[in-house]
Structures are given as structure tokens and as C-alpha cells.
Length: 75
Image (tube, rainbow, N blue to C red; front, side):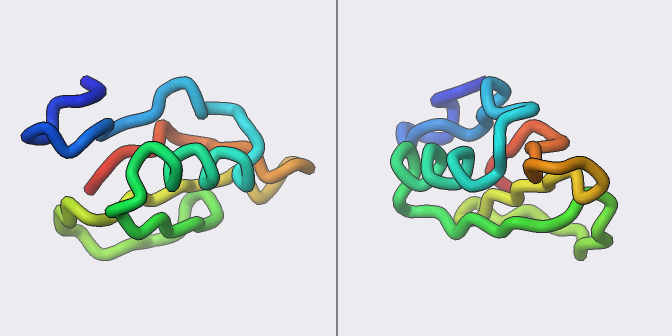
């Protein structure tokens, strides 16, 4: 489902699952400079609600390397 957001660019990054969080955030920012990237430990409670200008990147805080734990996506 990449590229389906009214021409605004990618909306998810499945290729970043398991990647280190810092380079993953850089990749998302290059692909979508118009969104705010929020980095959080996996299992962090977040408010429900869609935001077309936000990408949350959850990382595995239990493992070394802060690897991306879920597919980052706009919302």
C-alpha cells in the first residue's frame, strides 16, 4: 500500500521492519518530509486517532540496537 495517499507519497514502510530505528527514521523523513516522525518504545500506549501528517516508529526496547518492531505507517 505504498503510494496510495492522494499522491502525497508513501504511507507505509514494510521494508523497515527489523531495521535499526535511527536509519529507519531518516529513510521515512527522506521519503516523506511532510510528516512528523514519532519514535516510541514498543508497547507504549498512544491515543487512538488518525493523523495524515504523523508516522509512529515503534522500536523493541528489550533488544540491543533499537530495532523497528512494527511496520511504520502514516496515521
